[in-house]
Image 1: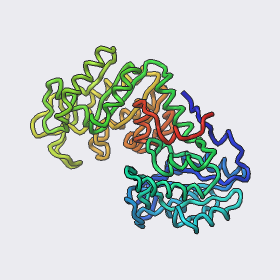
Image 2: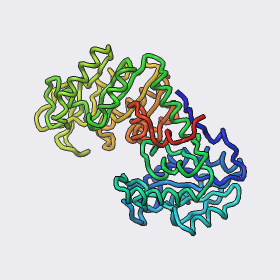
Image 3: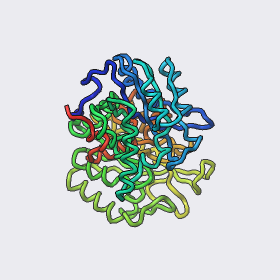
Image 4: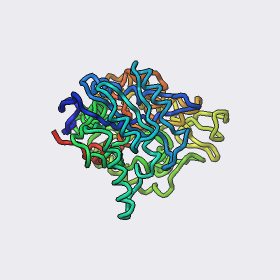
Length: 404
């Protein structure tokens, strides 16, 4: 299921003024960028556009400034980092709309690059416009963004599941609207994994809450041979099966739903794997007292990682897989004492030889932390977007682009 939308390859870029939405929502501490994965991921499209003789204006959001100009959410450090990675001057515009910025955009020569200030400094970027007044406000903002170019490119897979001003609405006023290489690659890998997988197809689903993963479980149940569960969400399933889970995370209101999910898996012949042992702690702290126990968790203790027997069991299953989709960690890997489960699964996936697609913010961080990212077929840049795509939902940022 490739991308049936036009990409930058399909249009003539010479002399064009391209405005491209990228996902430069990167972690910044004290003005320094902690992880530049998302900036690096956009370089192919950026280089291609300027090599083809277009000028380029880049738009992105950073964090959640809630429609206010907050210096800690400025894109300025990102412009500096991009300049370093690109090896050529990147002009920084201290706004994303208005006369001054449009003037700067128009003055760009072929091959020049400008990054605009955070689009979310305006509430119109991501507001849910319900009233006519709000709709007009948002539409005016979109028209302003549209003045920045005569070709629109969306290369921000990470925000493709949002119908925001700069990710989808802008297509109404700028044509052609096409996908960048990163967007194309994301949809190709995720699409093939889901619609054309090689079997055995194993989905590894982790993270804290069942509620966030119900839709993806439902959707994957139709396609996979095995579902492996880890992370906090496992304990709602284990409690549903009648096990004691101590003080582990549980969503009481989803116990019936968890039982339904287990029943559906059985009916569809999907192997549904849950932890058989646990690493537990007496409090949510890396310095807590720790022990490894079997399936039953004693009172006042909480399970914070899968145990060694579970790791061995899951690794065995992963070894036989031909396609793997992984979304969500196996435990609280941010704390070193509870990272073994997630890191072991990282290694198992890396060594499996299967087509491996890693989606979701936390699993991506874990894979990057493990140093094994290069051993995975595809590490997605979109957390929520990859999840919604795996759920079988259409992504507004993709839908809005020109068809091939």
